[in-house]
Each structure stands twice: as C-alpha cells, then as structure tokens.
Image (cartoon, rainbow, N blue to C red; front, side, top):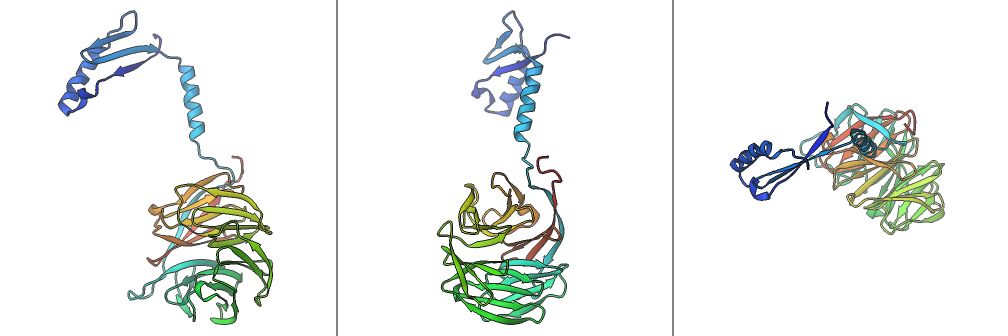
Length: 335
C-alpha cells in the first residue's frame, strides 16, 4: 500500500452559487486531481493538492481532541432518570404560581403564591390537599417531617406550619422583606432585604447577622457547614460567617431562581429563562446542564434534593407540572 494522503481543495465561491453549478464542479474535481511530481493539479478554477500525512500524528491529534471534549465527571451526577411527572392542579379554573417546593418522606409540599396556600400531595401525585394562608408564600424549608417554615416575602412574615395537622403553629415578623429560608442545626437562615442573612431560632430571635455576598440574593440553602446562595446570575458558596469560598457565574445563566444541594455538596439551580437545571460541583470548578426544556421544564422555579433517597424534585412556575428524578452518582469521584 502506498503512502497515505489527504486531499486539499481550493474553490472559488462563485462555483457553488446554484445546484447545477455544484454538480458541474464536482464532476471536475476528479479531473483536478492530477498528481505530478509536485503533488498538485488545476482544472478551471479548482485547485487540488495531494499531501502525505502521518497517521500516527493524526491519531494523536484525534485522541487529544476527544479527551478535550470528554465531559468532566468529577463529583457530578452521571445522569438523571424521570421517576414521576405530576400534575398538581385540581381544577381547570385554578391558576397556580408555584415558587418553591420540598419533599419530606413521601410528602411533597409546594408554595402556591398567588392563591395564598400550600399544596400538599403524596409523591405519586395522589391525595392533593391545601393549607390556606393569610399571606403569599414564596420560599419554604423543612424543619422536620411534620413541620415546615415558609417565608412570605412582601409581608415580612415567616410562618411555622404543621403539615400533618394543617395548622400554623407560630408567626415570626422579620425586620424587612424575607426571601430564601433554610433550616440547619436548630436555626433558620433567612435572607432579609436581599443584602443580609439573619440567623434566628424558631421563636424569631435573631442570633447573628451575616453579610450577603451580593446585594441581590434571593435564595439560600445551608448544609455541611456551608451557606450556598444565589442572585440572578451567580452562585456563591460561603462559610457560615459569610466568607465567600467560591463563586460560579456564566453569561448564559441570567435568571437563576432557586437552589438546593445534595449530600456530596453539589449545587443544583433552576434557571427560568433558559428552562434548565444546572449542577455545579462542590468546589465550583465544574458544571453541567442536567435538565432542559426537553425534560418538560417550562419556567422551572422550585427545586429540592432529597438526600435520603437521592431524588430531585423540580416544579414549573405556572403550568402545574412537577417532576421527580432519580439521580445517579459516580462511584469514583475522579472516574
């Protein structure tokens, strides 16, 4: 077998203006490949050059390119599979605005903002019922299997609610608009006015104040001695005293809405504008698009990771759809 070669052609753009011209010129290509001692030939306006190549170098280049394109798997879920799609709307006359959600055991809880209520159902979508409220609920956190805390943003109010008895057990007034809320180690972490975080006990007594990493913080989750919060465009991972450990920002993400973490510290966020769920590694260095519009996302808002069952709950804002996904993890971080 002779020495391997590759063919290089130089065409004038005018030759491909119409289909007829293309067919004609492709017929000329074979005539243009006239190999002389210099390895080239010309026919009309087509120049062909025949050059030897080293297959070993080509293989190495291809291998390098493949390695460069291989997604980083460090500490990220391998894939998610749909477990259940839910319709949490009971009546065609209802207009739901679902702003957040949690999963506690076999129970799902959603904040239905405009209708001033919580929507509660089983994880298979059955037994839908409501807890009416006096305020609009925006954010929610689990305190225990029977109790949740809900922040009612513009009413500067936090409600402690027993979802088993469907009763409000206490009401906490905050010093400003209350946004994201997270329960950790017997304390509530509450974003106040988007610029500070109050750490308070369940009576509402403020224990300390943490400066927020930006003036536009919306949501927050606290876990593993870390505080993770988001504004519209960035994810911040902070120590519990507010020191920023890392920040994740990409230009295509412009409308982050809610945040949650798994038991390995990976961060999951919804982006309403791009209809995606993004997962970011616990060191902030790697990310991937985990869910998209093709998975049913349409203005996704609420998101919650069930650490006991490795199930991700995601809800759309206004089309009454919610989804449960099984999340599979790499067994080897550095696989």
